[in-house]
Each structure stands twice: as C-alpha cells, then as structure tokens.
Length: 305
Image (cartoon, rainbow, N blue to C red; front, side, top):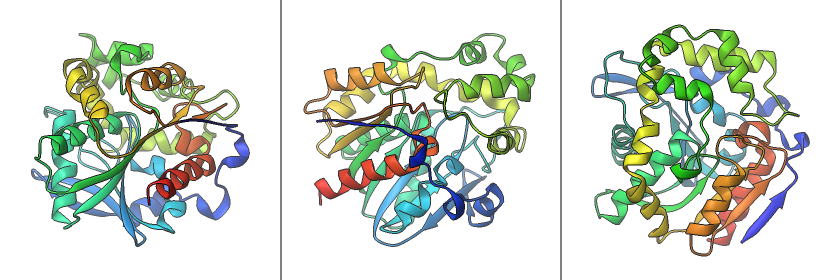
C-alpha cells in the first residue's frame, strides 16, 4: 500500500492546539524508574496509544498531535531517561533495551493489557525491541498495532548528520559539553523541510529541553544507540518482518537522515508494506504537519477496527 500526501504547511495544527512547553510540563506527572524521576503525560479515553519520542528531543515533540489523538484515545507518553524533563544521570549506561524496560514496566504498572505504539526516531528502535519481546512471549501486554514515523528502522540506509558522527567519536564527551546553541540550531534545522524550519520560539523550547538538567553533558552517552542499531540489526529488523500486528510507516520524504531511502527499504523488506509518504515534510512529521500525520494515523486505525 502506498499513499502520498502533499505535506503542505496548512496541515500544521495552529492556535489552541499548540501546547506551550510550560503547560506541557505542568500537565505531567513523575514516577520513579531505578531511582530516577521520569516525566510522563496522559490524557483522553479509549483504546490506549503510547507515543515514543526521538533523539535528542522529548515527548513535547507530540504536542501538536496530542489533542487530536486525545479526542479518540487514551494517549500516554513519557520523556525517556536522559531526555526532556526526566532525570539525566551523568554516569549511566543508556541503551535502547533499558528504555524498553522503562516502557514495559510503566505500561504493565498501569494495568494496560493492550496498547498501540506510535514511534518516532529513537523511539522506533524502542518499539522494535518491544515487538521482539512480544514475539518471544516476554511482554505482559499485547501490542495491537504500530505506526512509525521517520527513524532508522534499517541502519544500513541511515545517514547521520556530522554532529552525530562527532558525538560518537572519541571526542564525543568534549563535543557534547561544548555544544552551543548556534551549532545545535544549525544542525537541527537541517532535519526539517526547507519550507518549514522551526520558529525562533520553537527552537528556544527544543534547546531548553536539550539543556535542561545538564542534558548537554550526556549526549555522547545517548548517541550509543547508533551502534546498538547495528549490533541488534537482525533482531530489530526481524521484529518488523515477523510482526503479526499491522504496521504503517508515515515518512516525511524531505528528511535527509531517514526519509525516502528508509521508506524504500521498508517497501523492500516488509511483506505488504503500508507506507504513507509526506512530500515537503522532514524528519519531524508530527511537528511539521500534525494534521496530515493525524489523518494517516486515523485511517490506519480505522482499517484495522
């Protein structure tokens, strides 16, 4: 299945649908994971959908899509350990598997027996690990369906930015601590479509979340996920290929990191691939064109219910 949507800026949620960062934080709750405080957020009623954010941002990425989803679902999200408003311990072995443990324990602790996953970027790898665990009979809940946004589902066609390569290098610690707002903004803006770069006030929020609670000091530790994707490639790609539940990829094809090439690979390796391509949309479809992403999710949900 292949769908193409225009990705016009008119699809972006405006006005009251946009939640300020302060409101987002005030609407959340914290819980403890391994002695560390984790920021979480829940809203709405209905079949639960768990949102998994990307690197190096946080759950606030979903704020434009949030009110649309909350009209029809119980929507749940959190800032993973090392991200956003959650704790960012300096000496910690950050890993996709550990983040999957975090989500697994949280969802099970809430007593949910079945959830759908909506995953972006780093969160896509966490979702792949959760799928693999379900296929091994290890999850205490069922994954009903999964919608992926841009992310490195297939590491062989991932094209990291130079700053990501530098963070993975032996100089990563120095690069991380020395990251300036200007360098971050220059690199981060490249992820968006040319016609829809973040506004200055939006960049303020992204930078605030990144640097909150010494976030700059651990970027070189978080970036280890790129190596994990290679090490666990067969497990995580196999989780997609062996999935019994419906999968959909919503791809912002103007993304230079994991856009058109990732969508092509999805079509090559997944049986009966379900892909929605968003033209003129970059790496953050849910931020750049929330309306189109919501329609893609809504149609995906209706097809299987």
